[in-house]
Image 1: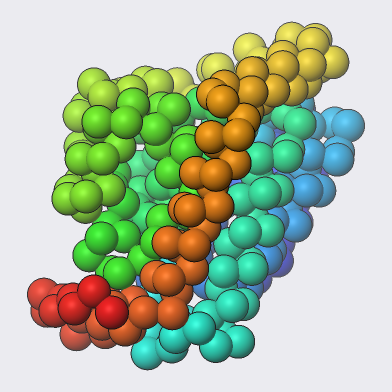
Image 2: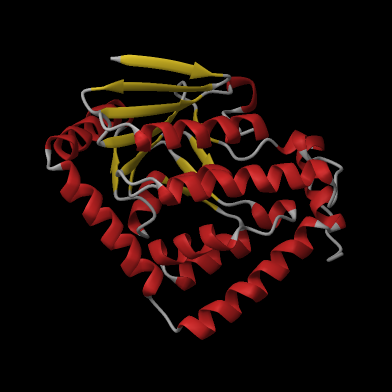
Length: 269
């Protein structure tokens, strides 16, 4: 077994299974910019390690998987350098998660919100316990949810359910998430670790080149779906809409309302 640690991202490799633990207990395992950078690096190292055949993503403790991005890092900011640093770190993280060549399993307990949902959607398999709470509160914060993660959500649950989750910002229990296809398996809290470990062990015991090839093929099929011209145009429009969110007063208002524990007052500006 090898173990390494950077800031609050801890990695462990045991029996061909690499585990990444996200730890920020004071912020319910929310991701800071530094943590996003460290998590991206950890995923790259594990993906490049020939001894690793599958990666597990989990939150430290028993209360939270990942409760989102750390709102305090961009509270009161608009489209300045600090906000750009958040966006760039998140983009690198999710690009790295998308590029990793071995299977990734999300082990979800407690709160899995916002950036936590983006991480889970980037995994190949998602396991949750019955006490989990999953959701995307972007509409309550004035955030433009990233295009790639929105696409992953639509692929997982369909356009109608994705619209429901993004428009309302409502949260699902583990069982509700399983019913709509957001998670692949839901178990009792005491059984989550064993269920994930069992599947990881099966994958790790299979032919690693075959597993990597299967993952590459699945990714290619997913990216090739739809009309290329229409998809490119839709992506441009979505990026423009997301960029407008970054420069909006509503983004500031959403962050401040969250910190002040009050309902937000959005103006559409």
